[in-house]
Length: 258
Image 1 (tube, helix red, strand yellow):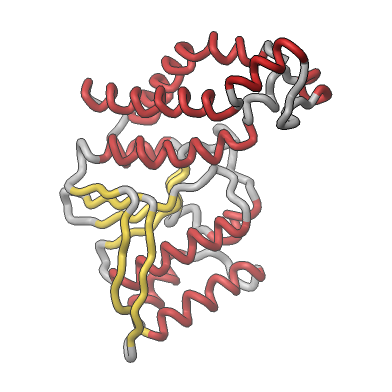
Image 2 (tube, rainbow, N blue to C red):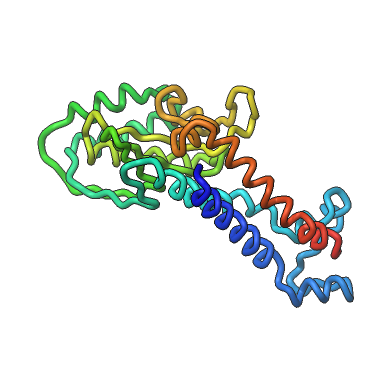
């Protein structure tokens, strides 16, 4: 990342943190909790707070969901500096063969029932071979990147541990995008900002049932280094740490209110 991109990304992270803290608890209620030990909205959870002080007040359950939206914006900002074209989000529409529409429905159903194993190459071959009557189709993709080499990359970016419904939604969108484009230069991905298992093998059950991790998933470092070039993952982590240090005292204060 160059200096301008780092500043833009840092501003996005700082704005996210400021809004998250402001939205976590209404200011007036914070004052009443501190002064009277009364929470009109029922925010107090004494047993939770006994273990991790302030965890309920800070609304950490929704933190990961909101962070996912931030990752999309950051990826767009970084990618815009090195790739030919970037859009976030990206609406895609066009005609697809009826056979493709039926295949997508049946394929997702088979994956959900565990009657089939994820196989991105097989899905591409099937969709590219379809012909005949067509129907209109449309989808919205989280992030679109066109490289200077003319390749089109479509990313769905959700939490690192999505539920089954989110996996079905992502698979539907990605296969629909592939069916609309139907070109060898088209690539569809689940872009995962980080591996929740660290350096270990990814084990969350739902994505494993729907995604071919070898050819359909960019996980952690490979995702960010594709978006922004070699070293982007570590550089981005460093920016998060810097912003985290800036907000550390504010968070400590909030954690100590109850």
